[in-house]
Length: 435
Image (cartoon, rainbow, N blue to C red; front, side, top):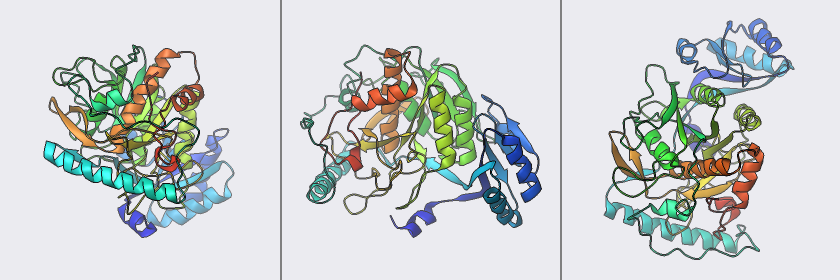
């Protein structure tokens, strides 16, 4: 994707994100005040939602993460950048941008889905053939996956069968999964009583899901073993659901809200997985955000694995877009999407940028059935749908290995993937599998 195309898709809020030296955050904040005229900060402690501070504006400091969200006037911005560049206790500065839910499209009619499915299959074959002949190489030395038989979804969705969630006795019991998204329909028959804790980071909106995306992702990660209707679709069927509403009812939210959700989630006692089916596009050559990498490293230190959607900007075979932010951070697992035939989804972003910009693994992301707002169900496509499959599988690994570190859980997840004979840049190590 050309830089101009990416720039046209990005919306800036006018605020800035400043990474503080955690050994001396006060010195950094003092420098912002004296050097850039930044107003006194509102501090948000670990575990607090901070929604009031975000709503009132000004400068907000997420103490546990060592990140300041700075509201500046246009004539202050050059002074802010100069102050950060000249102050050792200020590590970096980034403009705040608006992220969005990563859903490709809705498949509600059988005919519509299969038209798209055949398209995707053709694109996947063409892409794989071209890349094997060229630079892209499948993983070598591992038996290749056979093409799957037609899926019988009478008892469980094709995605659950593909990741072997139907073959394990693990349920995710005792493990908390934080879904940072558009909220949740907590009154849905399949999710009632499952939400352990929730918080909204969206000014003027409750945690109730007026969009549907967050409800869909929560269902895929943690839906029940025996739904009220239809086949089973949830991976970690007994995991605790923690909901941080960081995107509004239109599926959009600025960095400050997402970081506020992370700051809240890592302080919840039983949370061991954070699932983020959201992001923004990156251009070729773009690096990762040091802000999100700091947040991810802090989560890892607390025994929490962060999983994020790789993005849906590709239009294969004509164009492959790089993995988006924040999935492109080295300490966040980037999840791509495959279809029921195990080909890479035409929209799934690829690992084109270095230094953390790769795809780590893939999950089922085409024609994925899950819960929807209003008590119903819907089939969706997107790396957003693949991500909660992997989040649920991560919860199963935590249940199986309660004494492990976050890095050990990531290593187990990587080691257990199924090779799909796809280029590593598209599928990483392969399809995530249940332990």
